[in-house]
Image 1 (tube, rainbow, N blue to C red):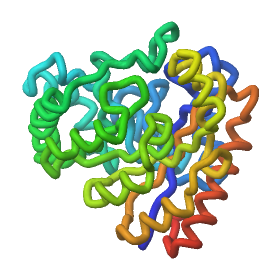
Image 2 (tube, rainbow, N blue to C red):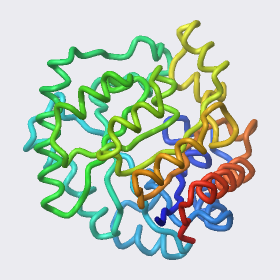
Image 3 (cartoon, rainbow, N blue to C red):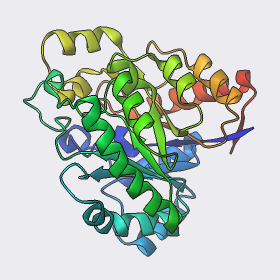
Length: 299
């Protein structure tokens, strides 16, 4: 079984907190990520917008597009409106051979609100999530017909945050809706990482290896801090630097015969966690756990 290791540019170029990473450039990100050994990068907002420009940009640094965020508005839009809104990104990802589009509902999320506690996120009933899942299935089928996979990202501050909500979404949607499984977001949201992997092994298409620092997460929860406060304080970190057992995660991926992308997504304050140093630490840890699990890393 072969996997590929990619990274999000968020450690060098944080889209939600641009001032935090103002001393770093996207060019530095791609150069250093490739130097460390990463073969893919998820799309960042400060990359060229046009497809040919983005293709040339990635080729310059010999790095592939291994996914990228898509801010969904399906709760407030019709299926037709949503498909029209994301067509350009879908077509671009198809042209650049991305393994998926990482989709998350953002019409009512609080993840980008600096003064809103993450505890005050929106919550929907099971029936409401199931109704949303049916609409999402239509978008995913439309996307698949064009040649792209929709991988849903459960995210802190959104209405799909907890393990239960992930279950509702998966139960209510068709198999065309795959899961971008994020270890850090799931644990931060109070979920069981391994139980969720076991339950939805057949739907996991894309994996974010994100670690957390539990003491900081506890403080964020108990003192009603925002998601952005959590990022600045260091709630997230690279695999091997927090509390998650990534050997168990890698072992499970091997049992699933997973052959997709493992992506590091670990936004931190670079003054406390230098991007190169920490991204290298995360990469080395992934190599170690993959080797132990019998997963071959494509370099």
